[in-house]
Amino acid sequence: DQQVKQNSPSLSVQEGRISILNCDYTNSMFDYFLWYKKYPAEGPTFLISISSIKDKNEDGRFTVFLNKSAKHLSLHIVPSQPGDSAVYFCAASLPSYTGKLIFGQGTTLQVKP
Amino acid sequence: GAVVSQHPSWVICKSGTSVKIECRSLDFQATTMFWYRQFPKQSLMLMATSNEGSKATYEQGVEKDKFLINHASLTLSTLTVTSAHPEDSSFYICSAGYSGGAYEQYFGPGTRLTVT
Image (cartoon, rainbow over all chains, first blue to last red):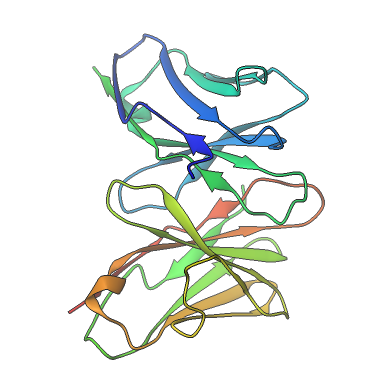
């Protein structure tokens, strides 16, 4: 049962344009969502997060939007840079925080110069 | 930001032997550490959660006797793959978190295990 889904395995964007990565979830009890960036053969790096009580969180070029009614979140990267090329994972956490994160399958972003 | 290290970064071992992987939080005290496994082009699968000084909590389907986890201090957790088999070959990643409401986990660089 995949509670967190990233339905697009890959995305290709031109440098300078906007990258939009999407994530859907099924468990309405999730109260915290996170985005991680991962390069091959490295551990994921935390990017940005959002609490379920908010609908937007912005940090520099990265903005995460949360639509609770649709159980959907998205990560916007503006402007996209070649160094952003990586695999992006969204993850979700439950209120009874044990630290357990449930990850989506990941989306590979390629930013072309 | 918080730094988590893993050692070794890669290891090759023969079937039947045991391999120990270390995970260290370098600049903070990790009350909880997590061990993940990632197969090629797949998501991170949580194997177990370990809290300092207590037994690890394993996810369903993960063999406790095969994947031994020890969290002896607030900065060190170890994963030992016992009697390794080729199907245990994978990328193992640890992460560390700390209490106080912080949801973010900080990941180590991962360890590539190849069992021949």
